[in-house]
Image (cartoon, rainbow, N blue to C red):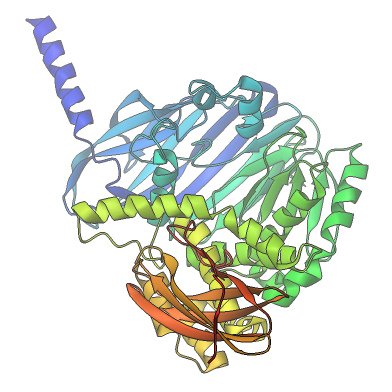
Length: 577
């Protein structure tokens, strides 16, 4: 009988765990004391967290997740130990491929919008671990260049959600073998936690003074402050709010180089690499400044470049910190630095502005180089496939649920707030010009961006043009992608070598677009722009100074669902009687 009673209790717990809503609660506040012990690769955290029930139903159970290499030591509610069950939870949202999940049974249900405050303690090790990648077939060496997070004796770098759950989270499971599920989970988490406050005291008990860095807006600068203990370094970091930033921490012994807009922390004896980085990146600083200004000291944002010891490691940027090898390809270093400088100088709480604009500055920087516009279009084109696939997936969802509408204003899909946003900014630039766009950006104030139409109004004030159709189709609503096709071409020879070419362009998609139309002639070419509404046709007449040969609709600056039907070969033109 005793065995049956125990079995019933266990079965009840399993049923309870299966019924958990892992995304019911939003973490609104973290106050953490983070202790790092490099020699043991150990992390120990104590602190308080506040969560809000954002589901429509009262919640009796509360999930808390950390990396599977960490273990829960205590969870208290109101100064008393809380009842919880700890279990492994498979998820590739952590580099180990699993989480250590505590299911807390609350003494009473938390109503919708109710809050709960917990005191927590957990600890363990964070070794280099690429399990989630190697188990799907990624070669071990390549996997380590991607999942390089670890606490080590000489160097520590640990990224947050999507890499290492070193602070508590709560999400549904994600699997790298299931399409974009990991990225979608991370995006959903960021959207839920955008207003969360995170404060932490970061301490290192390693031997000798170490630099402690984190990527917050306040604090986080290189620090080796002393405490009463001679062997401890401390830094205090604050994210208010968290926004789109993934909290990360870095501990190591670095030397440094300072430039007007950024600081480089490099591994001792690697000064030549740091000087090379400075030389490569310095020319990009004034260019970024012309577009979005320079990092403002009053914001607390200090652009920090930190060297990764592995020369093959994948660079990573979040908030004010860029982690990168310093002997990487020069062009890659420039582009990565441009993105980081743009982020440091121009903040927006809206992801489509914050991320899309940083990518636009990258494309514009490429354009002013020797490759010209085509270099920029090649860079933008790298985003087209991912965007097209994301829009196809949304089309499938819409066919089952007419309420699906992933506008740029509210989307948590990375392929939209990065790739689609890049195209949106580039198209705006083509339509209004650099001068007007730069003036609109200079007038932007993140605290004033309280309505979706704020950016549209800033641009309209500089151009005096009605861009309502564009923002409606591309920003406020998700109407998919256009599909431009040359429907008919009628060339007419007027006199001598002069011609008039009448072109009808059909847009078989739902989103309107102002597309460039390129008429290639026997000698030279001419480009015009044509606005084609969704599911409509538009006509334009183009004068040609020599025999017309070909019409190309869209030079790649407008994302389309089908780019295979954009070229039209012109037959011999008719002659005027």
